[in-house]
Image (cartoon, rainbow, N blue to C red; front, side, top):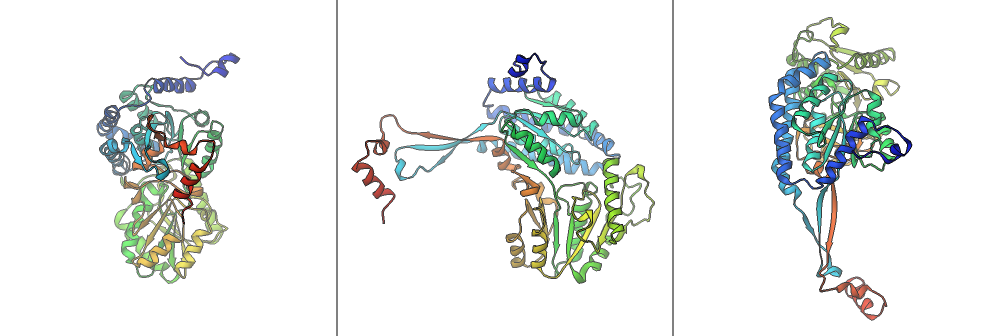
Length: 482
């Protein structure tokens, strides 16, 4: 076993985390460029085990949440993961192919191309809200790029983490893919390992700590963070359509989705109509809450209390709260099920307008013109997603061109994340880097420049000293010509 030379010199024992990392480093050194056939086989085994274990995975996720709608786990996590794996497998041969690039007139007789080389050992730190998808999705592209992978799932979903550890051990050797479980201290130690790339999905605050830890090793990072994703409703839009799609995007996983609509910008005189339509839509999707198997719980007591605190803070600061609870049920704390709360008359002194909500609270902000909406969005940190409900192409274009966000949904919410060809990631406070699709393959690859000049012909001698008339003539011919 290769050990950390500093630890060996100081007489320290190698930790299990260091040992797991060194095992993968050794394996990568022995096979630095995993062939196409082997990468496809890796993907095939993952697809097979996800299909076979889908019900037990859904049970583990639900147990961690208190209750997670099985249909949501099967569609938003298992199905999406499998589709991403199959998408990558179909395109992998083309992605791995070297790409020729032009060399220019000064480099005649030479050739150049880019090649995609595995980076090495990749670390992936996953969140609790989608504890399967946020492991499998980046793993897909790390494996497609030919890497070894260490996974750190969330300590807040221990049953799901244990299940992932079990199935990864069944599918892969420990020197290829391994799952590391443990509390926050393990996550901190994990982020300090000298990975060849580190991907973290989680909050902006924790993302800053991850980036600092990675900087000590000059480890490149992809940070998939969150933020307050706005939704803009135009005056002439079909309000029933908008309410239905916003309701689905907001209430998927009980609002515990990083790209969920965080707040809605609505024309002043449409606020009440929007709330009424949203209430009607919610009732058709969830006629009751307490005993409804389709309705997901807040994932932990900690998150439940955080949301209650946000709601209480808004109430004490004179927000108008509309509770959408069609059956009028009393929901106990133990179930951690919350109705949808629409918050009106909100202002910037409220915590709910400054913190990512990540739950079934939906502030509504009135606006007068599209430029007012743009100004409101741009006065805040750049979000992960921007949703726009509008039929006017020029107005849509103006909104897109004059704001920044990781992604945009026009006349929908959340669904752009499920398009494998679209790169996924944030900007500014909502993240760094992209993955999904070809961008995911490139993220986990070293894009290597390869330049070739024939040994028998050296046209570059024109550039060699002693400098004389040949260089001047070449410069005037190819560069300084009028």
